[in-house]
Length: 250
Ligand SMILES: C[S@@+](CC[C@H](N)C(=O)[O-])C[C@H]1O[C@@H](n2cnc3c(N)ncnc32)[C@H](O)[C@@H]1O
Image 1 (cartoon, rainbow, N blue to C red):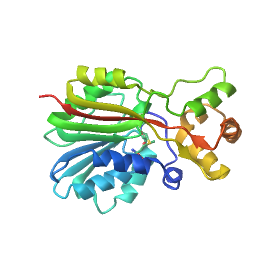
Image 2: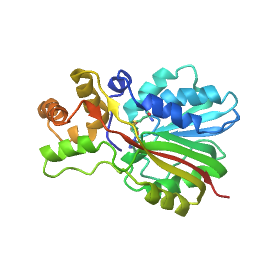
Image 3: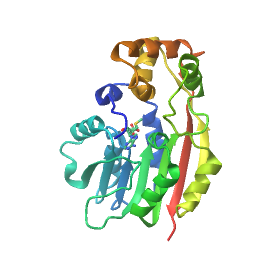
């Protein structure tokens, strides 16, 4: 299973993910009765919004973090009649609950850059998506958080390669190879500015550096986060988002 998250700390932060979620939702065409897969759903902010848009439909929420899914369950207590929650590793083929096995749309925010092999990921998503179904996602793309990566490089000799920040051409080719058509792939710069140091430190620790901090002894983690923050030229995380809309070919 992938890196475990501090789910309560995550939800306590002001997250640019909220805007990314709204933008991604706005690119999903829904009539209200579909079944939608929320992949890397985290604590369920967008899962809740999807349920609002699907009065006669269902959401299947998938994530690899038990802590994130516990937080999702708390958020959506009382709304589980049209919701299924699946604890699964996205680096493996998906096994969905229910008899039909195929969903009408796949949705994802800020998750796919954690998956090293996008070719295998798109194959796995195509296998559970009905022909004509939509794939709509966003994640970190080529050039994402370059200022943070420079700061980490400056501090550590053997920097673990934990992210896959893909480019437009490579993503488009992998989508088409997996059987997707009508592909729209873009990269959008979207820097996040932090008003104070405390917030920047909490954000880096909880959202950005988790997989790096996992490798350090507990008593060295706060100093590492501070050292990364001090090496940023400004209190900014310079996000670049890969946004995708595609249709499963029939
Ligand atoms: C930054 S959070 C985004 C969560 C949510 N979509 C949002 O926008 O707030 C990334 C999520 O991807 C999940 N994730 C990362 N790698 C994964 C993997 N290999 N399998 C399943 N989930 C994974 C994490 O557990 C986490 O919940």
